Length: 80
Image (cartoon, rainbow, N blue to C red; front, side, top):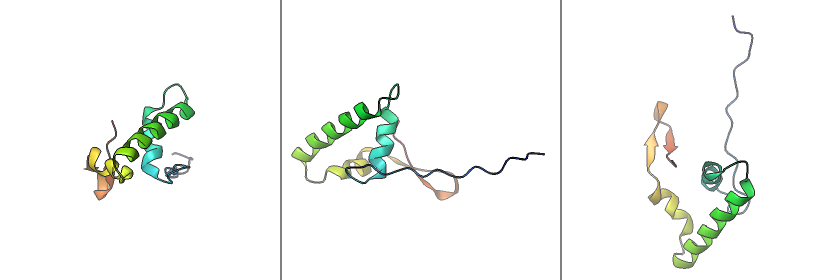
């Protein structure tokens, strides 16, 4: 019999500048060798370019990435 308790679900933290969880999830996906600050710089530079071209810069998360239905009807964002 297992004596371990059940693991708690971790929630994704929000981004410090845009206060958006999707930005933080994207940063974690492009993270390499623990260089999170470099990943944030890449994302912020890309967001700045998108913002110059379009005023709705956070809408590209909804249109650019497909949303998949997961277990139990949960919505999962596919960033791979």
